[in-house]
Image (cartoon, rainbow, N blue to C red; front, side, top):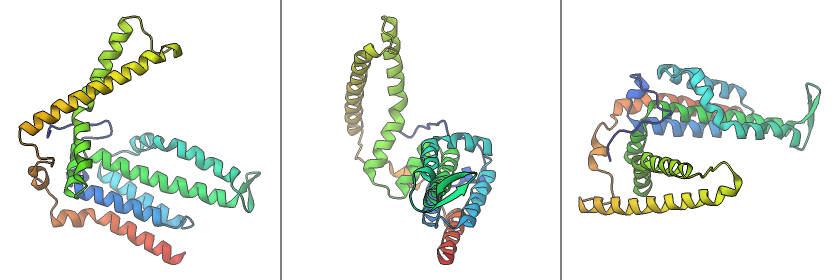
Length: 256
């Protein structure tokens, strides 16, 4: 279970951010996101300061802006919703480029765009500098419920196996003349999904019984928690960004 697994967002490097233990990076990202969410939407300067912090961490982690922005397109549905708010919102109207827009809708759109984008960028930086296995290890060291970390561990370990199984089933269907592109063949596709679920369930049962026979007690191995755990100095270094973000948020709340 301790085998290393990469993911599409991880960017291998030897930067100072990559070398930090995963638990300090997770805690820093969560505190930073909370500070961003707690900031009043009218404090435009604060969001600019947060963007500077994100850019500084990205430069330190050697993650380019093009990579970040291309992956941030995942928030596009929320962007489309935010764009619609000024037109659908109620209340006072202001004229922008010849259009009569809702003032509350404009503030709401800005609130979604600014906070959502900063949160997505912070999450991307965490994923780009931390492997999936280390993320689970970090959550375990932060005393995340064992049920969640165990489910995530098994999913990480056997996701590639299930993807390979689904790919083989698809090839077998196509070789027998089935083409899943047509709507009237949806029944066969649904049957394949059901068969894949049953295979995954049976495989999980066999793996669980095999682990029990080898001494599995329902907890992560103790070595995961102790090996490479963060020192006090590393916590202090990682606390720089969240402390600055919390200070910005507190200042914005006072000034508002």
